[in-house]
Image (tube, rainbow, N blue to C red):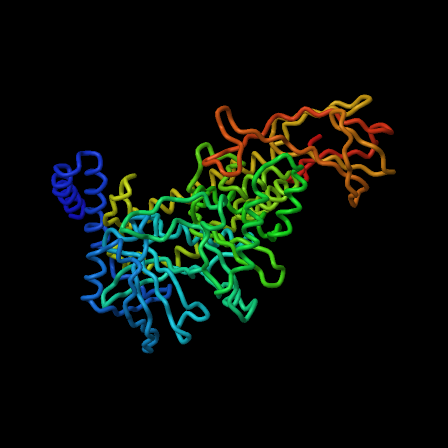
Amino acid sequence: MITAIVAGAVLVSLIVFAIILGPSRAMHIAAAAALNIAVDGFAEDPDPHHIPVLDLAVDAHLLDSLQADLPWSGGDNVRAILTDNGVAHKVKFRYRGVVTPSHFLGGKKSFRLSMKGSNPWLPYRKVNVINPKAHNLVNDHMASWVAGNMGVPVPMNEMVFVRMNNADYGVMEMYEQVDGDFERNRHLGSHEIPVLKGDYPSVSDRTVPRGRTLWLDAAYWEDAGAKDTSEARAMLRKLISVLVPDTLPVETHRDSIAQLIDVDTWLRYEAALLVLNTIHVDQYHNQWLVLNPRTKKFYPVLWDALLMFAPPDEPLYYVNDAMSWWTYHIPEWRLQRDRVAYEALVRLQREGEFNARLDEVIERMKPSVLADRNKYGNVTLLAEDVHRVSVLHVIGSLAGLRSSVATHWERTLRRLEANDVQVKRDSVLHITARSEAPIRLTWSGPEQAVAVNGQAVVVEPHPMGWSYVLYRTLKPPPGGKDHPLADHQRLDVEPLNATVHFEDGIPASLVITNAITDAAVE
């Protein structure tokens, strides 16, 4: 019976959409519509919600007025009531999202709530409630969890079930709007702090704004925190000035940048971008700078990264923005980023932390997903094709997310662990490598002079005695650019060919390891 209904629904929908759109798009849209009716429509009554329920009341006439002028009405606030456990809270409601059609097309529209000092989500007072961009509903939610698991600052992020004007609106993603309360919300301080937002310009003249290269000019960053941002803006201008490559040594740039940013947090952030495998943080948008009032240094907040929004060929060193470029060109920072990423991948993939967390999230959401008859998402690669989808889309997309995550993470682990290294010892040490990890040399005994390819190098003290890392050279592919402000760059690892001369001869205690994994390479 159900099969016949599905087939009939698909046929009717296909005829209508094919006339309007053509056969390929029509097939996707018609199938999605039919599955929503047939599959979701026959779902049994689900269990009670296990995720928070957001119960809103907004004047229907005001909603109609806002919807009639979307996306341009996205900045217009109207009064609304948020009810929690029988208590009514006055809030402000507005739609949001101009650049991304899934925010404002279809029957599930993204919005923002501004709440007062008394609300059920304290300490948070401003939150975004988003129609999830992926059919699996949890892509950005899981990306935020992964990054937070790696020690990266992230907004509060929760999956919720929304009811609006006594009708089910469906499963949505709710997350904190970053602002001057970011540290106060985490009980790290009691005052507003300077926060700078790097994103597309605000909408004006009812046109979609063009992106600006954020790390080119401090004026492209918007104030989003404390009223007095003079100190933060002066620091940002200084930071941008030292990101411009010149004839000064890399070490000079490194030391200047380190005076302005929290290096450890920033490298964890860069490591998270590799683990998440995303290009959705770039030169133009999704950037936040928080000025830590204790250290007087900037730290980033991961925002809207999108898990597995992958660059072509999924390189180890994709340049998301100017800060990524400098991370890769400062060898010891690049190594620290890679070690953080490797440690996270072992936990998330090899030890199963990611799948365990995803299973928990799915189990909590299951009753709400089954109850949601208002699922909307992109059903083709065209941004405007936002249509109803079904629980089968959710299931298939979740399977795809698991598969793509496992594939990328295992491939990345293999690349970081690879030890395609040849070592020849005679009067000197000759090392060649085609794998991509840097090589660490460690030995005990008295200090001695060391030269690599004829150039004297500085060795570092080590618990074993002494250490030196043979860092790898990065170059863009043929035709590529190697500049901090260039778009969509990648840097590839050059083969290693190093001759190491020890003044007193090769130490008998010499140990050669992969500098990322610490595994012996011979």
